[in-house]
Image (cartoon, rainbow, N blue to C red; front, top):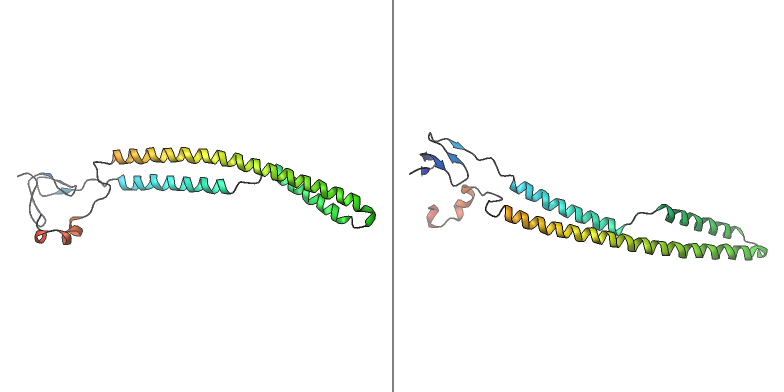
Length: 168
C-alpha cells in the first residue's frame, strides 16, 4: 500500500500524507510549502476595513478650505473693528460693521452647508463603491479558496478530541 503509515513516525512506501506532506521512498517527508492563503485573506480583509474606516473619518471631518479661512478672518476683523468703536457718536459705524460680520457669518454657514453636502455625497459614493468591491472580493476569496484549507490544525492538537481511544 503506497504511503501507508505503519506506526508513530514510521512511513512505508511513497505517496502523499494526510497532513499535507509528501512521502518519498526512503521514509523522507517533504513538507509542502505553507499556504499563503491565510495571510492573503487576512491582508485583503484588513485592507478593506482600514479603507472603510479612513473614508468614514474623512467624511466626518471635512478640511477647512482657503475660502472658509478667509471668511473667518474677515469676520474676526470686522468684529474687532466694531468693538473698537465704543463712543456713542460711532455707534452707527459699529452697528454697520456688526451687520456686515453677521452677513459674512451667514455666507460662511451657507458655504459650509454646501461643502458638507458635497463632501457627503462624494464620500457616500466612495463608500458604496468600496462596499461593492468588498462584497465581490469576499465572494472571489470564498470561491478561490473553497477547496483548499485556509489553516491547518496539527494532528497532535486534535488527538485529545478523537473518538475510539485515539483510533482513526
